[in-house]
Image 1: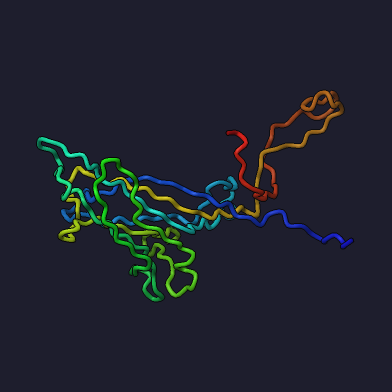
Image 2: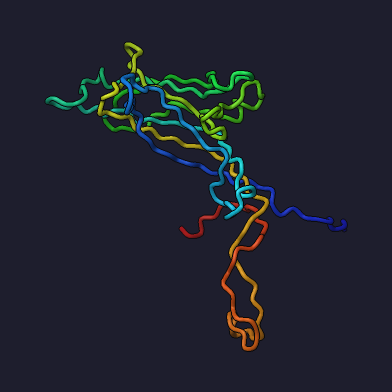
Length: 247
């Protein structure tokens, strides 16, 4: 029988999560007349989605890393309409091209993005519209060599925010922006992020330890201190797996 270890590991895990977010692609701007046709998707890496330690900024934040990014767009409906409308009804005018790229930065040029993973997808109108995937990127593979680095904010931009991808929707015939600045039409976009969320080494949980003299009354002392409300206490937490017992 081997001798017991002098210590034990109680926390060395990360929480794997899938985050889904929806937004509308548009080119409008409150100032200026140039269509803002490039959408830049930023993610705050300096955050903690689940286990912030309240009141302790130094020990309450982790590097919430995006491992993979997936992007879909919703095609236009292929059902023709009659009469005058705000957007052309012909199928030829309902086709659009989605250009996506994952930006990176080179040493010495942190303010200029260079394209790493790129994908161009022509999205056709559909009668029964279904999500069309326009980008999948394994960020871990893209940046594992350190030849090119993730593109983070600089200057007055949040320096802990990472630009995960950029997208532009163009007319496939001309290569100009598909939507004008004043176009009421928008393209629905779905983003899914595969995240790695570390569990903080310093954790708090609300609990209390109460002493009394009777098993029958766990919260009452016949001759002792009164029961105290639960308070945040230091604990050590380890992830053991996903459970769906409440379903």
